[in-house]
Image (cartoon, rainbow, N blue to C red; front, top):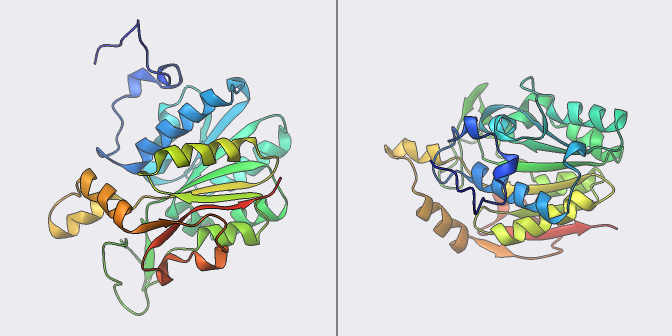
Length: 256
């Protein structure tokens, strides 16, 4: 790909050119979220030397490979713990941590809960890609597109309610289709003085492979269009996707 020097893309200066193209599947929500995040950084005129991005396990963990920012990858399941320690040691830093389901399973969500209870001012962008559930001590895939495997299946956390319960000052949930609204939420989260959480519902495209094919992006976006409803300020206890015919999205907690 030839770089356009006369009309560079707004995020070109923040990406490691030698690492592109990325490992993510075409249409993967992770790439959409990263693009939204980098564009949001430009809107707040951030001091890039004071931005630190932490990532964890799996495809989400690859995010730090592509950014020309202060980055750290924690592949041991301690991404939130590392981000918390980094913020406490360097209060002037704006620390952002990207998570997925695997990070939660490995850490048992304890680091996340402790960060909220201690009001540590880190910003969590949780890309909820539904990677793992635990059934008979085995990791098996599950998404809204696949039926529950059996009565022992453990489905994903209610992330917004968990975040609010442990003291988050800002909580929102969107999908990759709602990119403009996602950027506004990221903008709010990055500027809050306390613990902030933005969840992005984005099941892994590879789960369509159970039918012998990888999911098409247009089908994914249509699913988000047909099966989501925006309800700002909805009580977070109502946001458990296991109990919803439609996925409720919006801004739920905003404490100044």
